[in-house]
Amino acid sequence: MNMQNPAIDNTLRHDWTVDEIEAIYCAPLLELMGRANAVHRARHDPDHLQKASLLSIKTGGCPEDCAYCPQSAHHREVKIDREQLMDPVSVIALAERARSVGAERFCMGAAWRRVRDGAAFDAVIEMVRGVRGLGMEACVTLGMLEPCHAERLAAAGLTAYNHNLDTSPEFYGKIITTRTWQDRLDTLSAVRRAGIDLCCGGIIGMGESIRDRASMLQVLAGFAPHPESVPINALVPVAGTPLAHRDPVDALELVRMIATARIIMPASTVRLSAGRTDLSREAQIMCLLAGANSIFYGEKLLTTPNPEESSDTALFRALARMVA
Image (cartoon, rainbow, N blue to C red; front, top):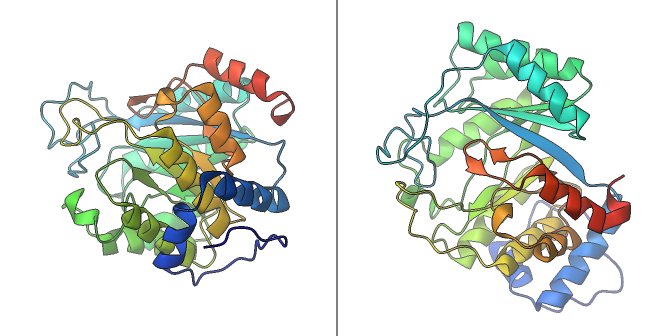
């Protein structure tokens, strides 16, 4: 595909083909980055980088068998401290601390298969109200949702619901067997109908092909509207999980994934998510040039490491004008 196009096309399309997306992904890297950066600048403030903070509010014991996840109860060799649901007062205090160091969005994750009515969900509703009361965006990831639960979250002021596709429909069964592809689509549909923003992306480095990556992006770009937030994660191999043996993702593969997501979903926020600890400062800046405009800020992403605040402060200083 000839990437050189003097007129930057940042039209919102929902009819991308897998072949088109794969061709974009495999284009010469500098041309790919140049096109993605131009699309990004046409749609977004290039000086703004959103910082989001992510907290595990209930850790471990999840009945799902996601091959990448240390919180799965199926992976008994993983060394993880299981924790019950945190109390809302503690969560809101941590959100306030995150806000004080510059976080704009506070994300909360519970290792549940699905949301159920009861005291635990009532507590999450209280957390969402508390975070919104701080003037922050609030996002949760709680597993599968019924429409009634999505409506309660919307009424509490939830900004976004995270529910990743993880990978392509073709490769999905090799990563997860306890939840179907259709289950994921049903939850995303419930979120959309409730008027909550979608935070939906995936993971690379799990053994999928480039075509699998293009297929996953094609599904995301087929949503109308596109997900407001698209997190792009690189696998963080964890000892005791089935994917513990996977080699680290080449940083340039992550750059390509972000650039491709930016081109086909020009208005979405593209989040440079898990895997940042393995990236140099320069590799992270390449991801930002390729169209990422949000990062997770804090020392942990649920249960996997994230760069320390001091490292991110140095990154922000190097970016100078991008972050005040």
